[in-house]
Length: 113
Image (cartoon, rainbow, N blue to C red; front, side, top):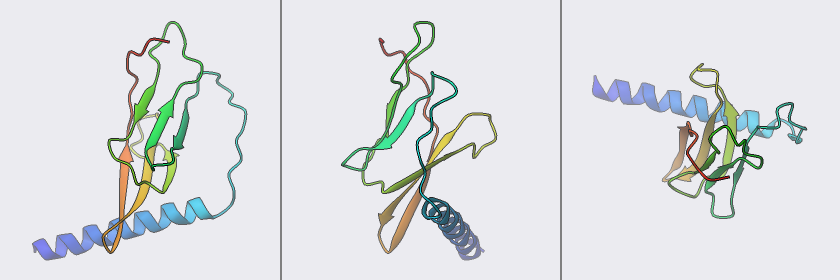
């Protein structure tokens, strides 16, 4: 029974990772001017660490400064994966004979502007 659950979980992860990879490879994504000047920038640094920064923190709100606990990530996409109204980060990286898919949900922290 446990083996069957693992197979289903593995198939689901492969399906999710494949869909994410296909979405990332479909067409180039061009930067747009943000409608909201309070939007954050999400990027991969040279070591594959996912970073989130707020280039224009408001004096009345918490600034967003976040980094993934590990590096080595090679692709990322943003989406509201848990339907809470906020964007999460889906990330892929090679691992073992396959890869790893992780979903991150950074939160605002009290960082001096």
